[in-house]
Length: 584
Image (tube, rainbow, N blue to C red):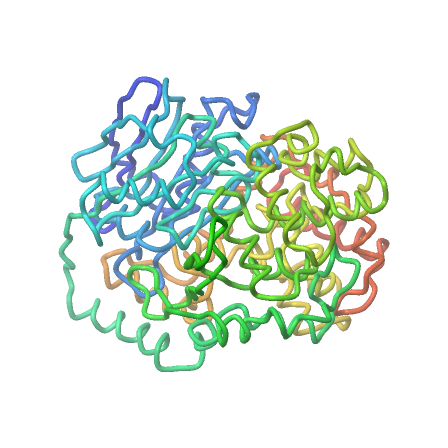
């Protein structure tokens, strides 16, 4: 724990079956989380090697607030993305951060490739390398069930596992965490598959003293009261992020049927409100979070071999509904659940899967690909074809599925349809078409996600009425601010609570005094480290290409113009070059 004066880094070598633990006081100025992971990636990445070369590391890091303050529940994962071939960054919660904290580590580096399928059992004593040949080929649900039988410690352990998609190295395979959360985007599951690593189980059984109970209790209570006693986070517990469906639909910002429209006629039928009214069975929280934002629904389907039903519990949220609902034209909760159940079990990233299959549907309709290649009819609104296609994605039967399994940025140039292949920076789009803030923010954000800099929220506030320089300043400063949150590591739902003065007070209460100004400087330095890694991986803003569809379908702020986008991109490049002294 950081109050000891240094972060502890667990370094695991899969090739040799060994591990070491080092004490890295030099990492402390980077706070933890993504800051620590960025520094470790710069130290360990092989810039001239393929993203799936065994030498490439997968790095996990928590922060100084993890496990001891509300909403400090996430683990930051950093790696070289097989999907974009550059900066990869993903987050997951449930028990992951708590388990790493109380196993006694602040960061975990995994390198090399195991000689056979392996899973890791990590605890306070170190690492056990266990045979996973009996788990290889199983889906994420069955793997999790067996690992819970193999590994003791209910309530103290966190279980991360891949499915067939990761084993077969689909470039957007995710890593399932404790059933209902994921390191979803940019292919961390693929990296695990390339290392013959089926799963990681972390056991957190240590305890730590708090040196100043009075200061800690005061700081904790102040945060807790904001979290549970004000409306700041109420929406996340009540309807959940699924309420964004109707909001975005109303303002014409809900990507529909491969972004052929910004509104979906059946939005009410697949809204968060409808999911809640018709299927919600329970609401869960990550360990250490009093909010409870994980909405779990019950999906019932007929048994394929006779009478009766099979029931499955599946977590839903906005991005999952968007990617398999409006994006694919699926107009009922049952249809969305039918595809989501399969995608989750196979270990695919839901967003990339939905966007990829939407492109394939339009490409098939336009005659760019054939049904002999898709091996199933793909029609907007028909879920059965998407269930079959998802299965083919995870276990590719032909070149078509092998190619689209490498992402749309790779596949579209092979078949045509680049103008409607919805990627930004090589990353399939998230569920927002709100305006220039969103489009520029996705394009330039470190991981090409709306979560990098919140450009969609800028659009929500200002729409068409903004100065170009103000938007660019916002995107940079907001990404720097989020770097601080992602280094603590605080769930971004709590960004309205964890203001700089609140963070400073919380850190001081656990023996890590930092001023708001020092936090701001740390966020800027982490921003610089990310761009240093991106450029060393070969990324350049010269590579930014925007599919025409983004400029053809009106956003929530109106029709976007390529000329203004490129002007904004030029301003961003100029601002970064001045700030970072890096040629972009």
